[in-house]
Amino acid sequence: MSTTLSPQEIWAPHTRFNPLPLYARMRPEGPLFRQMDANRGVPIWLSTRYKASVELLRDPRFTKDERLVAPQARQARVAEMEAINRNMLMSDPPDHTRLRTLVSKAFLPRRVEELRSRVEAIAHRLLDALPAQGSVDLIDAFAFRIPVTVIAELLGVPPEDQDQFRVWTTAITQLPSADRLESIKQASLAFMAYVQNLMEKRRAEPREDLVSDLLQAEEQGDRLSSEELIGMVVLLLNAGHETTVNLIGNGVWALLRHPEQLERLRQNPALIDSAVEEMLRYRGPLECATHRWAREDIEFHGQVIPAGETVLVSLLAANHDPEQFPEPERFDITREPNRHIAFGFGIHFCVGAPLARLEASIALPLLLERLPRLRLAVDESQLQWRQGLVLHGLKQLPVAF
Image (cartoon, rainbow, N blue to C red):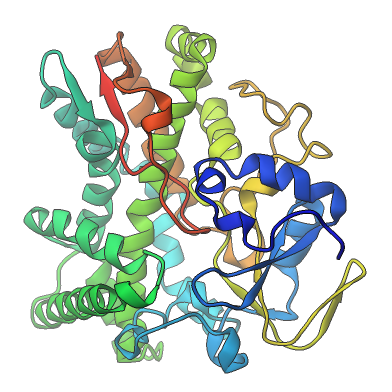
């Protein structure tokens, strides 16, 4: 494809701060754009348009199981991480169907709604703990602690261990460059050892939590291997809080950038559901869906994706496609319709989406009510966004109130 764009521009610091201008330049050239993975030195294909992204997310010619593709297309891994990757997110049917079925009931909307009072209590407690005036990192003091507390309680993890998950997940989800492999390895080993120990405790003494439920399902013949059990629990602990951390953090950032929308929501909290959907569209918790690989040479919209090459569906680019969303750069908490794909699409649609929506819809109105003078404590140019092409969120969000 002829283009004036650098094949590594997606990794540039200014792009990582705000990828949307680059996606806007890519989009007229085609639905897929080939870039180079700066860490692995292999090509990756990025989607830029909404309709093509939906097609890719549903296309069975792409696999989520990296074991099925050419070695040069595989992500840089350390052997100790293999068990972590044996989960529903990184598998195809029938394994994906079997694994997802085991946990989907815990995240049905009616089951999630039962958590409302607990989420409210956690949010109030965190806000009570803030200093009467001053500034805090809202990610650390609020956005992180709500979802990690909820998912840890669902799984049966003690409160004193919750901060450790942040250390492990931060290490595991960082870009796997050569200088980081040792820290990734150590975090992976520690995380898996913790999960194994937790499962041994629940085998000996089952409780009313999700880990006990998964172990019981294994005993009833649902064919979970030891690796699958570890992979499932690690995934739930990781994804179960990362998504909402970024949703709340990005959502507050968007409101602070648009004070008229913030005031509109503060005056009418009933708008929170549509506001959350716009936050998901405008700057959702994921820039791209996790990796897919071409099973074979695949023709897609006039381009050929060679077998084994990686495709990343840019949910962020899709949610800013002007063919789907009029004035996509306008942040409007009453936008309708708003058929974004921030949680993905198809069989890998985020199983925890109802929980993330509930947590955000409770946390944000309480935050605005309790902190009427909420504002950024630093210039916006000082904010740092997380690296990588999958998770999309702020490292810190210093606020004053």
